Image (cartoon, rainbow, N blue to C red; front, side, top):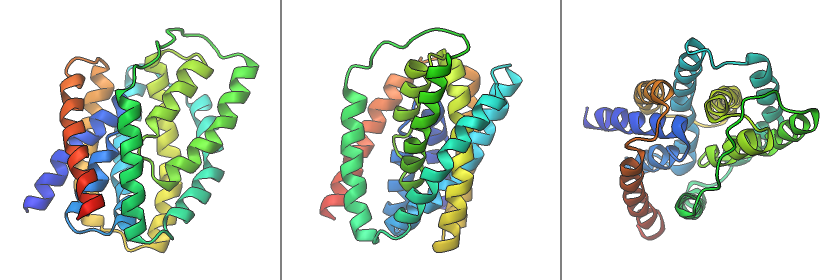
Length: 246
């Protein structure tokens, strides 16, 4: 029972951070490894939790009038080839090697989070043809990363949507959650066909991510996120030490 409660709480934080910016899965995947789940399986099981998180956020953005499903769907479709390659590759990585890789990726993402973020472009217009083509092309790479490990994908998606395609921040997040929903369905199908996922843990996380994503999509402000990220960083450093040395 303790494990389920811990995972639900972790899920709330994960869903909130993922919708607001990114990096939430740096909590959910390591916490499952901490509970004894092999790294590769934890990576696949995490997709169970990502699914309700993004369904919740998509619905919340839709109710607020920030949806363009035609563009979201075309962008999401472009992630699928990369997702298939990434997820199939990730499902074949031995768990001990995955843990080492995860630690390295978490260090890199921590550094990215600590760097001064470039100013966002606040616009709300239809992207030009050239920007649309560039955005769709970059989705293939994002799909690979999302299929392979997902961690940090928000830090790839947001610059593409906001700076390359010049969408405003709320519209960017609305597209982001729909795109992640698209490739997560495919990634989950790949992982579930090749690994024995821990559905109990995934569903517990999913309950939390649904709540966290709904809160983030409805709030869409940065008040309090600094404190959350500070705690997140401390926890992540502890997980990195565990993954490398224990």
